[in-house]
Length: 327
Image (cartoon, rainbow, N blue to C red; front, side, top):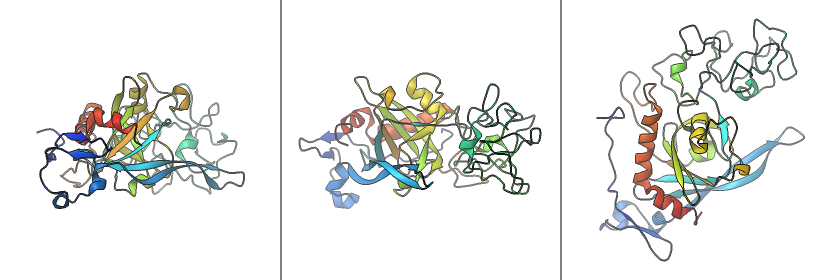
């Protein structure tokens, strides 16, 4: 038995493409009603949208663009789908994602420092305090000791309100402990093993509108790149954000680009991508903390193997490339 444990496959019949654009499960002889299906189960259905928002001159968020969200069951693996030509880069959970500020690098990013700027780990312009450099400017301002930073990407000691630093036995001593939304609760909040490392594990960010359609942290996903020679990368859902048009871990972007990713994938790179989130695909673990969906013992190959199984159960590359012409 694999480390994921046993899981139940669907009937998995072949999908037949009809001339009118609908899809039928050709090997099933049972009435649709007995399966809880309708005619809409065999075609992609628009179920919502993803918003892209920016702050206006008054500092308020406003929607600047939207893309549609679709539901399509495929064979027997239900999925939520959208298309985008952009994929933001997420370092959260990475052991070397964030470093305390220095006098030379007040954003904590630089040679030998964090991969990402501290401003991206906080919802405030006052982002960090380093005892070695208490007067260092952070985004042009000094740290206000009476105004603790609202960290959103770094684990914080609930007593001191200060971010955890990795110790000598951790992978990156002196770096902050970056966190992901998906966790392994068998480790303490101050332990990097609790979180999903963006530099080694391919993952996608869960937006609120996708979560409202039944996708949860720990579900699996596929990202298909359209073109004469389409390709696919697999991921787990492991972080969260309110809105956007696609965001994934450094490991996922590197897989899609076939090189080490240091910035987002944008329209200039010309990638037409389909994001397929497989509903109810999260693995329910048992033990001391039953019900969680991530184990620090899992590797990139474990995530990719599970994602590939879900993708094939849903319909695989043949169905994905066909849907590029329909949504």
